[in-house]
Amino acid sequence: MSKKFRVGILGATGTVGQRFIELLEGHPQFEVTALAASDRSQGKPYSEACAWRLPCEMPARARALVVSAPQPPLACDLIFSSLPGEMAHETEDAFARAGYPVISNSSAFRMDEDVPLLIPEINHEHLALIETQRRTRGYERGYIVTNPNCSTIMIALALAPLQARFGVESCVATTMQALSGAGYPGVASLDVVDNLLPYIGGEEEKIESETLKILGRMTDGGVKRADMRVSAQCQRVNVSDGHFGALRVKLARAAGLEEFTDALASFSALPQELRLHSAPARPVIVRDEPDRPQPRLDRDAGRGMSVSVGRIRPDAVLDYRFIALSHNTVRGAAGAAILNAELLAAKGHLV
Ligand code: NAP
Image (cartoon, rainbow, N blue to C red):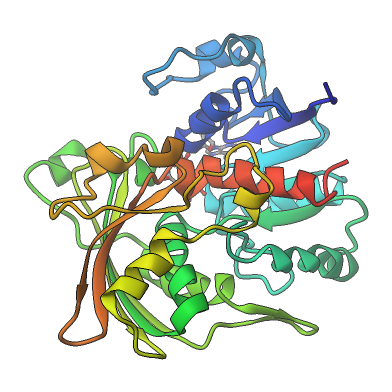
């Protein structure tokens, strides 16, 4: 059996950090050897620092690790970062500069021209930016690779097969997003019981800009943004996990319902071909029941890594409309970053 890469998790006590620990338990390529969080948690064993909120038991290996400050050096070969955006910039840069590959969930570097905004099924060519980044930032062995915002990952995975087969001119997305997307303790219960909140700070802007970078083409001069218009409206709803999106799309060329549905259902890409550990057999699962997908029933599809799509119909204003759903802390965060790391390992970017 080949040696496992040692992993450090920044923000290890948070909603995404806990998901990292759950998903990395028993992983064939990675083992968790370092955990970091705020000074509230530092110096304590993880079992004491972390109010574990997942239904599984806290893994024994993590329980015993003492939580460190999020600064290099840490006893690991690569970093998964789930730090709050405001502090991620300085900290992730410090780790990359100190020689660590940093695989980040936070928004700090996503839109930087020399940083890959990676979804392995869509844009693995963007990893060429690692070399650009080393040149422009003077990193020697380290680098930063980011995963997109949780709703954006779902939307981009639904659009990518359509863009490849028909071209997408525009997309209007209305999201209904789970409470866990706001971290813990997140939204006050009195704000969300018997209610929904029609505002998630920065979310609409992230979906509208990140989608064009993800679906953009790698050129000698960097990532050329996809030539499409995206409009997003985002609301927070009273669901624990699972972001839901109502999407309408206008295609560049006409498509029948059958070929539109087939483009989504038959989508398969490099992670499936390489059989990466976290890659779902089907990145997009098309459901034909009239009342699916639903968060509670479908968020765990493909071990939380598949996007479920349903209610595909012709649209009277644009060309087609449909519903998409995905698990925001798995495919939308920790699972996305782990799949990114698996691709980086397969492509020789982890040593
Ligand atoms: P969270 O539950 O609030 O957890 C935040 C984590 O960061 C905790 O481990 C906390 O440690 C640590 N932290 C806070 N302030 C710190 C400081 N000054 N120094 C060091 N560590 C500090 O948040 P989350 O939902 O896991 O989100 C983490 C990141 O992932 C954010 O950038 C978020 O935008 C992104 N993200 C979240 C989701 C999602 O679905 N939740 C999806 C995609 C991306 P203590 O416990 O010690 O305070």
